[in-house]
Image (cartoon, rainbow, N blue to C red; front, top):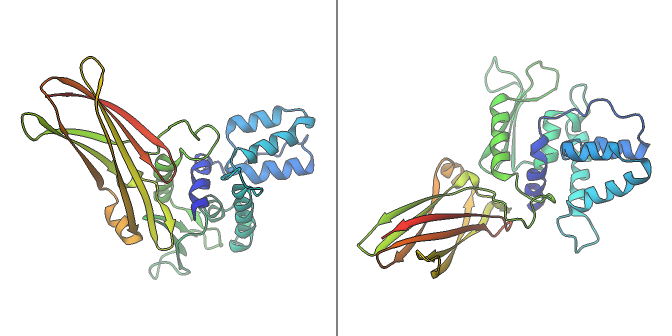
Length: 300
């Protein structure tokens, strides 16, 4: 289940670029196969670089392409590559209706990028008597809809779900590509509110939208832990306080659906002498190790 979310982040940027155009004629058969297979996850910059290489350097590019997406470089198996290619094979067999190869259909593309849905609802004759064949795929609290509008077996992603994919992408895209690992880029932003509770005491309230939190699917539950650390600096920029707290989350799919559109609140009580301060806040998702930082001004 962990691999699903890793592929999600790398691949959704290119979700709607479903065609690679004409296959370049100067590629060897194995290079053509690679170039076709990675159409959903190769960036425009990588594509340009690959096609601009002399034939002698393309095999090295292919090796590095998969290597930098390896989820665990300490093992001999590249889990990302193995899972990605496995999904292509599965999509070819799962979505055989219509005249397009299964892995090149909308359902195939979503399957490859997100993995097998937790639940797949099928309506061969639509929801009602006059409706068209439809499917609903469940990914956590996200629902992806497909409709066979022409009754020909070609299920297309509906516009509402296209917007949903953009939302998923916005929340999840900073994952395990070479450009993001270890650089402290955030999966989600957060808001900060400061409330006065007494002359000396202030309550710093951090709010994080649930839809922007990356969870790891474990069985029927979605789990993660958020770590919030803070440092308080006085007017001379001297650190005078620091602390941290970890907020574990374990939610069912139904709970996630109910919380969509709501925010998680984490409170930090501070006791300070009168004066001007700055508070540096770091929110870290311990599931993926990505984090976001903010620095706010505070007056007591």
